[in-house]
Amino acid sequence: MVIHTVRPGDTVWRLARQYGVSASRIISDNGIRNLQQLPVGQALLILIPELVYTVKPGDTLETIAAQFSVSEIELLQNNPELIFSSYLMAGQNIVIYFQDPKLREIFLNGYAYPYIRRDILRRSLPYLSYLTIFGYGFTETGELIPIDDQEMINMAYEYRVAPVMLLSSITEDGNFSGQRASLLFRDIPLQDKLLDQIVAVMKEKGYLGLDIDFEYVAPEDAGNFQNFLRRAIERIHAEGFFVNVDLAPKSSAGQAGLLYESHDYAAIGALADTVLLMTYEWGYTYGPPMAVAPLNQVRKVIEYGVSAIPPEKIMMGIPNYGYDWILPFERGITRATAIGNEYAVEIAQRNNVAIQFDGTAYSPTFDYRGYANQKHVVWFEDVRSIEGKFNLMDEFSLRGGGYWNIMRPFAQNWALLSARYSIGKIV
Image (tube, rainbow, N blue to C red; front, top):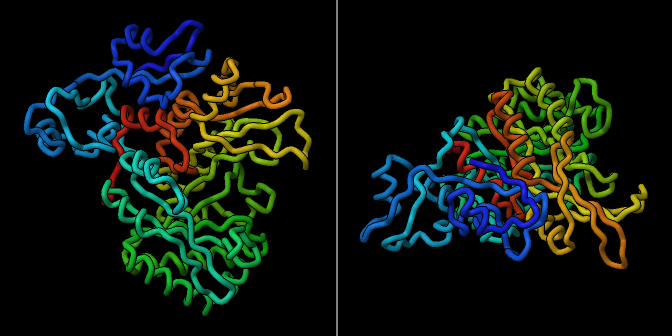
């Protein structure tokens, strides 16, 4: 495996000859759409196959998997073109495994909304352990606010991915409500009514776990929040399901702020089966331009996290997006635009600007001139920044990671996963 940083004059075909791989593999693994001019500074993942099998007449994925003692899912991971067409042709080359040995088994969660494009969802599913569908809220009278999730649940099972129901304090208008959460935490009959419905939906639709995501919980509700979690987890466990709880990215127990104070790492970590540390959104829509998940900041959260929660319970948050800011930044006025990581590269390519890599944040960035010659700055994720996060995940022996979110394509990420890890499955 090689991560190549594009230099002037590099082309896909030149790199294919240099590394002895196919051009089509480089294009697919990096989500390249425009081959005319690769942006200088772009990071490209070069995966070098160790064992390649040539399809014979009558072969199927099942027979090839059995022959080499691998799973059909692994074949899909290593050959993503098969995700959309499992029909094999004689003479077709199938990668069985790559040169670099896999480091370990990890578990990966992907968050998605019901309106995700189905091709993007299907492209992501072979690399996931869990699919968490966002999400169910509840009314003031304890009625679940329904979502259209059955098709996604069914697709998850096709790829041995465990579907996870998400409960949050999202209201009918789609916003988090601390007031709605407080109402629930202080009313036992309301909790019982809601939990009855949750269990019924999980059984009816085929969910295997529950993700509890309560953000901006008032500090005075911290104890009530923990009591609710205890009751909810006991009830969900009694039905044979598991529970994950999402936690704000704290770097110390006493971190101040509405987002942090009610998220007691030690207490909640002891209750939940797993936790997701939401290690993203340092760079955000209304904030000043910076990386979404600077590695130095993420490290501080992980260091504190493992001091309070067993690392085998921790899933590290991984962002699958970036932001584009118009400059100069004016607090309260400037609003960044969320963009996909592959689209960020297209912006750099379209404007013929070089991509830089910040060694402290460990994230790619670039400036460009947009409409009416306005200056923009973009921060996003690429294979280098993702590898840095994976290294951190491995350094602290975390259970795995959780992607917020899988709504946008990110081929480099999935290709890196397929070469580096065995993806744990519970289905």
